[in-house]
Amino acid sequence: MGIEYFGDKLKTLRKSKKLTQAELAQRLEISKSSVTSYEQGRIYPSLEIFSKICETLNVSSDYLLGVSDELPVKLSTAGLSDEEMKLLLQFLNLIEQNRIYKDE
Image 1 (cartoon, rainbow, N blue to C red):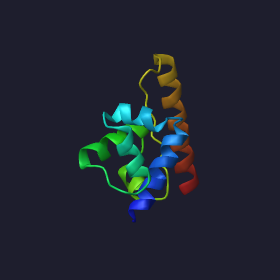
Image 2: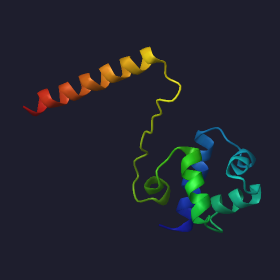
Image 3: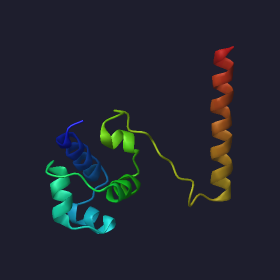
Image 4: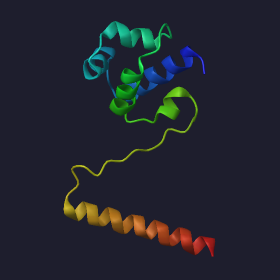
């Protein structure tokens, strides 16, 4: 993967989250010029910053590095009420039952 490819993915992800370079920089506790340099393919972030980028943008390192072209959906159950959690679990059980039924 080229350094430019990383920069393109980073820029696309940042924009999809409706973040400016300055806002992303603030969340990562780095300078805006560092974010600009990453996106323009001039430099790579440190491993620590790379990890923060993945966490902040809610994306896997594989996707950001170009190992995988699939943008994995990461869901968080934080903030769900007990009733919402119950409905989510029921839905997941239905999906699993349907999968088992199709495999038979």
